[in-house]
Length: 113
Image 1: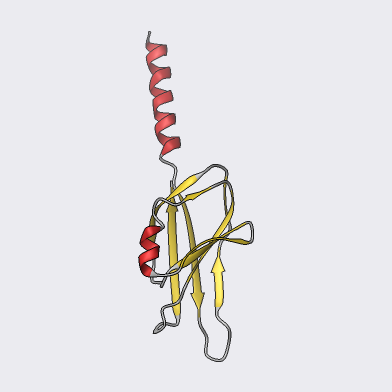
Image 2: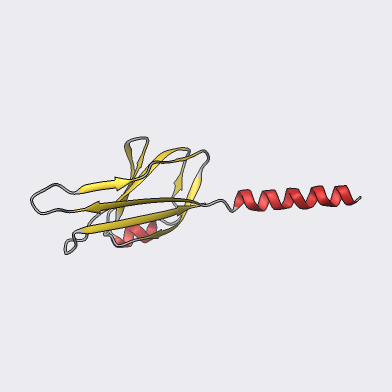
C-alpha cells in the first residue's frame, strides 16, 4: 500500500511539474546613428504547442519568427497585450521588438506555458 501511495504521489508531482513548464524567449533591437538597426534574439526550440502567458519589455509591439520565417506580428502596444493567449506550435522561435519612435532601443520577453 505504501508503494502504491508513493507511486501515485510521484506521478501527481511529475504531472504538475511537467504542466507548469515555462519557456522564455527574449529579443532586442538597437538603433545606431547612420546605421541600420541591429536585431538580437536567441533561438528557442519548443517541442509541443505552448501558449503565450505574458509579454514584457520596452517596445512598440513585436514580431515572432518561426524556423527563420515571420510567424505573427503584434505591431502596437495594444496588440502586444493581445498576444497573451496566442499559441505557438512546435518549432524554433525568435522574437524581435519594434522600437518606439522616440527611443533608440527596445526589448521584448515572452513567456510560454
